[in-house]
Image (cartoon, rainbow, N blue to C red; front, side, top):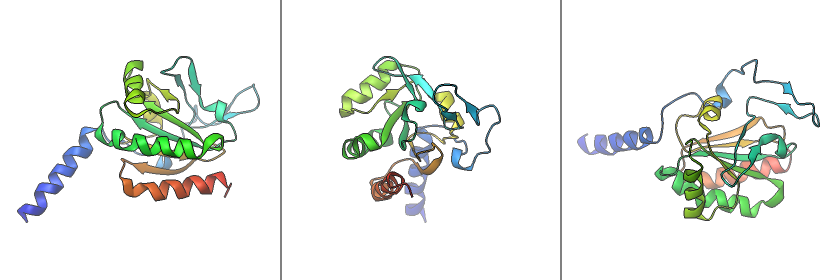
Length: 182
């Protein structure tokens, strides 16, 4: 029994180390002020998943710019070990699915430098936002990393809590499904 409890306690500690627990957006009730606030420019409808955040490279990242396109969103922090394990895979998805799939990283830290350091450490080429703590609450993350796949209408299609290489096939299959419009 003792041998079982040590790995269990260590796993619980590692999961708790990357962030506090909340409920994921896929199970959350929509908040009236966030849902269906229509934009005048082009008819994009802001949903609970909508965000507009500062881009670590300058400017802003606006989910509306990905209108009609599925988007893979990863919430992260610069030093989270699971975020660092996920980054190369997310970069691979970005590189292999080109212009059909938007990929955005959202650093929950307030520092642009934290996101820049993350990008430099892993050679990521997808856009990285920062100051994402408030948006992560809207998505009801339970720490980091949290990976969301939004369909073409920017509804949550699937969510992966944390990261493990065993998720790779599931993520790729879900991406292929939303790209096919199913």
